[in-house]
Amino acid sequence: MKNIVILGSTGSIGRQALDVARRYPDKIRVIGLAAGSNWSLMVEQIGEFKPRVVALAREEAARELARHLPPGERPEIFCGSGGLLALVNSIDDGMVLNALTGTAGLRPTMAALEKGLDVALANKETLVAAGELVMKLARNRGARILPVDSEHSAIWQCLAGQSLKKVEKIILTASGGPFRIGPPDLSRVTVSEALAHPNWKMGKKITIDSATLMNKGLEVMEAHWLFDMDYDRIEVVIHPQSIIHSMVEFVDGSVIAQMGLPDMRLPIQYALSYPDRWPGELPRVNWFAVGELTFEPPDTGRFPCLTLAYSAGRAGGTMPAVLNAANEVAVEAFLSGEIPFTGIYRVVAGVMDEHTVISRPTLEEILAADQWARRVAREKIRR
Ligand SMILES: NC(=O)c1ccc[n+]([C@@H]2O[C@H](COP(=O)([O-])OP(=O)(O)OC[C@H]3O[C@@H](n4cnc5c(N)ncnc54)[C@H](OP(=O)(O)O)[C@@H]3O)[C@@H](O)[C@H]2O)c1
Image 1 (cartoon, helix red, strand yellow):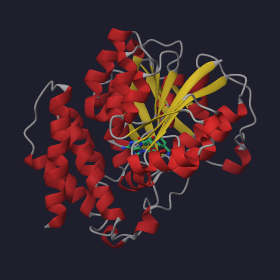
Image 2 (cartoon, rainbow, N blue to C red):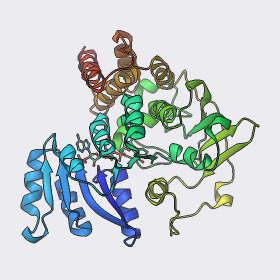
Image 3 (spheres, rainbow, N blue to C red):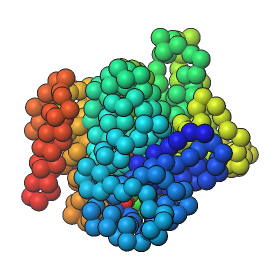
Image 4 (cartoon, protein in one colour):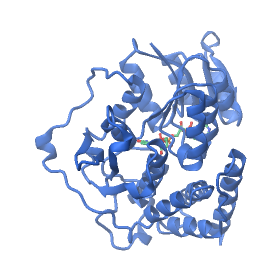
């Protein structure tokens, strides 16, 4: 029986993780749940999974939650900005699945690792903003970071039993998003067009990041830290069918790919079952229905955010945190109709241009750079 704490339980990954837990009641015990404000869904989740502790970041939502729970069924409730950390700090015996969105995931990841807890990591922003500190902390505390992102789960599976020294390069696949083929003028695309991802159903932030290819850039940085790989040895390939989730090329030219249907429950489950694999009923690939697997290079002229992410990764220090924070603000501004789709790149590039990199930053310096980037991004959007 594995004890699991799910941070971001009301989101896309969090709800799918609970679906995995629902399918394996003899293997997974949900002991903690945390989210931002969605108290009504949290009430249902508590009724079904009976966790010991829960947290909601918004105090008002936590009050509503407490009001709507039958007195006999009330877990310990943490709330407010420190609530997530208090929840993680109250756990001694479990794995933390971090499915929060954005930089909000960084401190809880570090708190879990600090306690020596394994972290199943969907929140890629943790590694983008502070990869060096996070990986070092995990090593020092003997805690594992188990990738949940489908691409990184794929690479992890391709590397099973292999030596990292024998890897020539990592090949990250990308669907190409809703605008891979058209329209020619991306400045006029609407929010609902950008949210219509062809293959994956995800939260809004990552869906927009997939449309700009910024998501793939964040994943390049995530792979850099998880697999200790130079940026020159991480290649992005557009693969519109999303059947190959990523590949590893070895020094002898042999390539191993991991495949499956685009269903996040599979990589979530693998992170929870590792090193085991649990038999299950998830849909299987029908090869004849798939028909063909195709590949093309990313069009960095149309999707310059991918190039920005490589350059932030190579610059290192505080630059990836700055890119990430500026991007979060710009995506929110696009979603609320303040800037056009192509404005996302302009905001992020503009903020990066103004940033003076601090190399080997402390956590405080990273968080300060994050706050600075958010402020500058907002000023640019206002102008
Ligand atoms: N969705 C996917 O298929 C997918 C695939 C690969 C990787 N990922 C990564 O997984 C992470 C989660 O993505 P998602 O699509 O699941 O996001 P999502 O649907 O937007 O869900 C985000 C979750 O985080 C909670 N949250 C947000 N800000 C918070 C805060 N300040 N404090 C506490 N809780 C907060 C939300 O709570 P409320 O809703 O209650 O406010 C919600 O439960 C992201 O890093 C994403 O890049 C997602």
